[in-house]
Length: 315
Image (cartoon, rainbow, N blue to C red; front, side, top):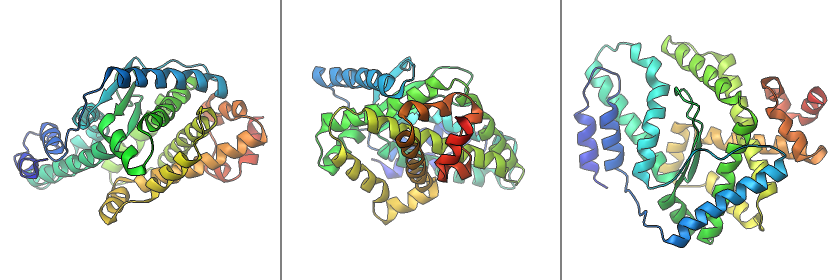
């Protein structure tokens, strides 16, 4: 970790845009230890086995047909930062048209903010299913950040291969829902674009924002349901420790979570999981999978708290 080099990269930010993305990458990586990526043959085979087992179990338990992404990578933290620079850039692109009173100062602040964000996430993300939203491609990707998975397994005092398998099931569960709902990327993209575009005009499109939040709650909640029902060993201890980790952390971590909206993500996990657990208990996991048949089947904000109303509407 080289904090001086990270600060220097931000201070030297240039270009014409509101963010110097080359400086973002340099600063984020300078402030983030890359981590070890020296996999043994057994470990590499373990990742392959976990991903394939997750695919087969999730297909069977969820009653959904899907394929694994074409790109599946085991990464260190710098790989993850590089992979996500493009995503952040696509989201921020509508803001590039906005002029600033002091463009040089604003650029440095924006560049520093993005570098801090990517660095923090790069040190904490365990796995990621990436549908490449807002990209001119239909490709999807699946990432495992090995140094983070190993570190968190040690922190939680759980067996690394078992924890790695849990992460694989969670990320492949996202592949299952996007595979079952080919309309979902376009639905999310439209609401993201509406929200960001309106923010450039100093407005908040509340309808688009609430639809986006409700859809992401369904995405996170359904993945929680699928992996809980499909994971092929006892998992109560893992679930308890992971839930505690989502809520825990020191003051600095808690501050970053608030600033980055990770508290909202935890609420999405919990609220979405409670909704789908209630639906699956009342009917079945296959009945819960009906949420992906069409955009109209997504639960409304009110239905997330009253699953019976959703069942009455879609039955």
